Image (tube, rainbow, N blue to C red; front, side):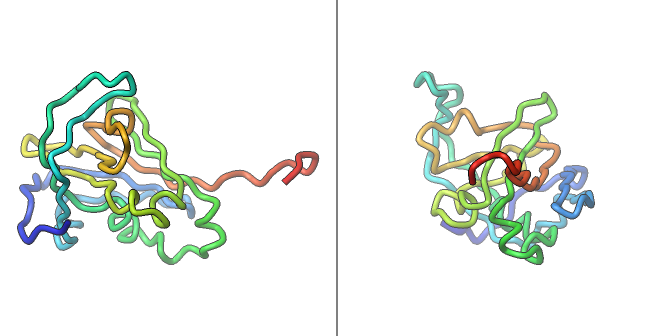
Length: 157
């Protein structure tokens, strides 16, 4: 669901994005200010055991796939993209992983949002996950796009 309003975006919110080409780009919140804002239904953050970690709230942010497109991911040949992973890193060392197929070929991929928090910092939320806790992260600082290694010659395809 796309909302017609803008988010509070502290100018010092920085996100490092490393693409398949190895180049690292630093994005400020203003770099994605013109992207459409999407909003979730009230979403509780629940861990794999079913315990509620954070109460339900509405998250408003930009799609992760739109931020990746800002960094030139759409220019990479599709066969190479199909063999890639997107690894998100938080300041505390927590990581969340997505496949290219999951982000770009499922409805769930459209619901992975980067949310700029009023106090600063970025939160990642995968709103379509059955339990949003395991891939929810606060303090997102970087994203890497990695290519899966080719299978070894002695391994079956």
